[in-house]
Length: 189
Image 1 (tube, rainbow, N blue to C red):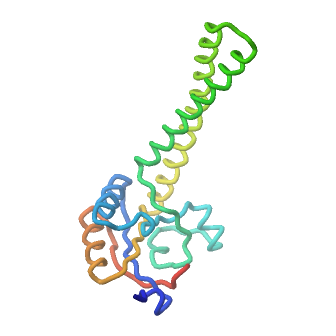
Image 2 (image 1 turned 120 degrees about the horizontal axis):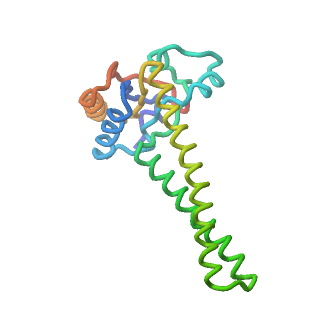
Image 3 (image 1 turned 90 degrees about the vertical axis):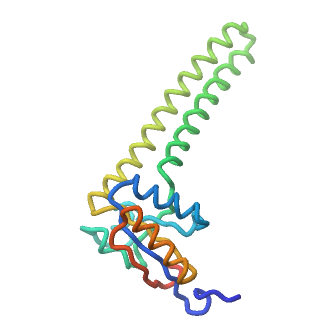
């Protein structure tokens, strides 16, 4: 079967603006529960990427809702950001403990020294993980603050049929999305 995108070179997508990350996460969670693949959910990229790609600043996200050239990023829930920072923290703590503890053990040190040093290594790794975690959390918070300062969090959802369009619009509206509508853009933009 040939898709509309293959036939016309155009794709249809629903778009909406959200006031809070919680409202956006609730809408996207419901979209995912209704079978919409994560790959079809995108957000407006950060302000720096917008300026680099479009060559100008924007005042309000509404200016970019229907702009096929507006740079986008894949949707990641707030929970996935927290999971990523937790994984980074755990990995660095493990690496610190293994690296430092392994080095002492290989040099012929006593088991007690090895265990003690492993704990110090875990603390160092944990500290580095905490710094990385704070950095990731701060970048995410800065992104959210930047988008909200420009009028909200912009979400696009690619659709494949009129029935999908209705479902997406209903979900976005049910979660306080505003300026919810469907448009066509050139595929691959």
